[in-house]
Amino acid sequence: MLEGLQSSNMKPYIPPQQFRDFREGGPSPVQKSKDTPSLMPYKYDDNVRPLVWDGRKFAYSPKHVDPMGEENQGFEGYGANRFALVGHDSVEKYPHGWGRAENKKDLAIFNALASLGFPIVPEQPMAFDKSPRFFPTRQDKTSTHLIDNYGQHISHAKEEFEHEHGKEMPKPLQSLYIRHNKNLGRDLDDLRRVFERNPLTHTLDIGDIKYGNVGYDDKGNMVTFDPYLGSQARLPEFGQMLDRMAAPIQGTSGTHYPNRDRPDYFGTVPEKRAADQAFLYQGFQRVPQMQKDSFRQLYHDQEQFSPWQAAEQKLFSDPEAFGEHAPTKKQREQMMGTIDRDDAAYKQTGRAIDFLTTPPEQKRLFEFGGSEHAQRYRNMLNSLQSEIRNPNKTPNWMPPEGKTDFPTPQELPRNEYTP
Image (tube, rainbow, N blue to C red; front, top):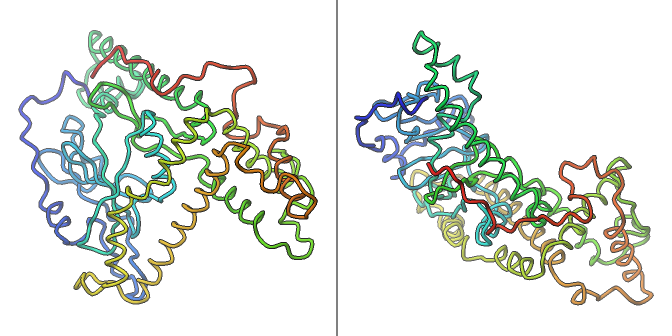
């Protein structure tokens, strides 16, 4: 827990045998439940967690890991949907069940932001052709040593110290702890401000910037390796709205904006939906055009998905190549359905990003004219440009008009305290 109490003669890290076996196509660290019907695709017992290597022994629960060990290197069972294999320099992330370790739209957005200079650790899809279950990602490892040791409040640290050592924490150690804790808090506040005050990341609603999702890179800067995309539902819904705008008009269906919806976060369901869409539209209006152009191009970069595409092609064209790990026809169909839905959400989000980042003069197809399509398109634009009522009800709202202190990613303050 405390730096001054750490062992100085830890043995070199040796990957657990289970880790090596798993990478060679062996059994998953998340064990399949014995009572799972054979026809059901890859249902796993969440109560069985992967092994955690503490530098000396294997443990099945994080609470069994020596807090003075080497950052829990080995298997880790954290996360609702995936687990991580933590090595010296990189982290591999695998889904608990089956499929992709991260959905395509979130991965593409986070990687695009990282390429633009935001303090996000990107995830790269990686090939894993030993088992058809897994479409994992790889990520550079960050240091969480300081956060693990000094992240909690001093009162909790003192209680734990007394419980572990049977005596009060010495005053010099308390002063050391408080200093490190204050430095961590300042770094975390600086990191949050970058995402909160930049128009692009604020509009995308990048959040969950907290201990457990952040660490220090090799330059001593705090970065996030597991952020949350608050607009994950709003973006594909925006793309679906655009699809409806371009669809053939049949009758007087209300789904084609026959009237302008009033954006209101405290209104009816259509008005709340209109508020979400107006939030995205008006937020992107504040993003510099060059940054929007770069963000759009980076999002659509297909090269980043090539390892997954190769594995999926093998799975669906030659499933028997996996031998004893080959999925049944039913499992293959369900995996195809899951992948297809993820691809559809990625494309719908892409259409939304295209519209939101394209200059207005390049998208005036229906802005003039008397056709029904033109009228409904104008109604949509009027709704998107309308003042949003009850903005305090939204989970993430833009700063007041006139606020201009939006730091660019390059202006992230250099940490005075380097771990």
